[in-house]
Image (cartoon, rainbow, N blue to C red; front, side, top):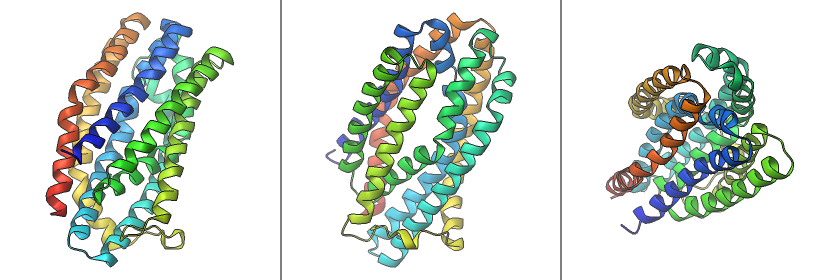
Length: 286
């Protein structure tokens, strides 16, 4: 329970992190802007969720070698994970920025929210490296039994996101672009904090910049372990995209309402997901 509590609190702040954009945008910019931001969630999870599932495999592999006190294998797994994260983040940026308009048209996004949705998603995907690097760093910490540092960095990122959301959207009037920028900057901040900490820790999982590279055999193990979870996430996310596409046909009010509900719905799953992650890591390490 002591290990699970920071994970639960971290996931809670992560969920609040996601809610803040909608709260600020909805209250300051109105329902069309809220619809643009809210409707982007399913598409983001479709792309990021798959990679997140694959990185679950990385966490399992690192936990296994860490529990066996195999310093060499832990190091190889950590550096392969970071290299893979960088490449994956770059791919997300390229695919997301180029194909965002096409994705949104395919989902039947209404004209009155289309441009805002394109703006929000393109800026979000432009920060793909920061988003994936953040998740990989936090996954490495949790894989070796450290659930506190991810919590610290999430709190810092969440506070930063709130401040920047208000500043960019309400004060500087950047519109939905401001909300996206606030999210990306906050993610990059937490990614940098996690990355720097990994270079300074005293343990098997210490990160050396010069050693960040892909080990073919290790990458194969990571992908084989994480691919089923990635596919599972994608199937669920794809179903959500189809649902969102149908909701889009009812206009911006329905989109805003559905998006707001989905943000709140996430709170219901926090205890289960947090305990599951903690239990999995604990069993593997032990």
